[in-house]
Length: 204
Image (cartoon, rainbow, N blue to C red; front, top):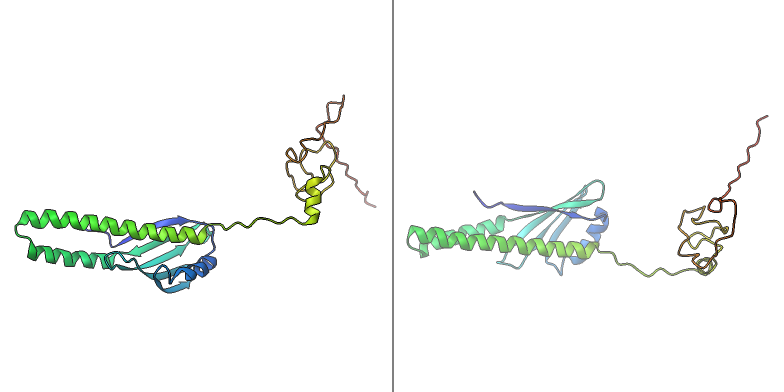
């Protein structure tokens, strides 16, 4: 059974392909990415991992629903290095047993290290690109008045009545906003209900 010539996996994100490509371009020099190309939700670039002098091509294929993308990187350069190592081992080592055991273990370990290194580095870059940089929200003076007034919805400013547990306009739960409000006394048993009137104009 031969070694795979490429490695592929899926990266989950809601980033659009256009935004991802723009941010990826900002990383290309620092992360040793070259020859970036982008078309039809697909992009590719060359990558110098710096491990064993490996250079590989990375291809990215975004899903149409923007739920993430499949990425794949070629291992052809690694396979070429392995072939050279096998030839070197064949000249240096004597005996069939040594020629099979020592090169096999060395090649297998080298292969795993290379795949692990490239995969982890790419995932680190993808996560850095797609992580949210949340900015603190600044409230307007009007929104601050909504927050301070228990008779107004803090989200949309809709006027509330004492029976409201949810905003009738936007549906926001008012439990945290109106903790200090006292429930009205009622003997009807309908204190949790809001009466909505609807008027209909008779047709002439």
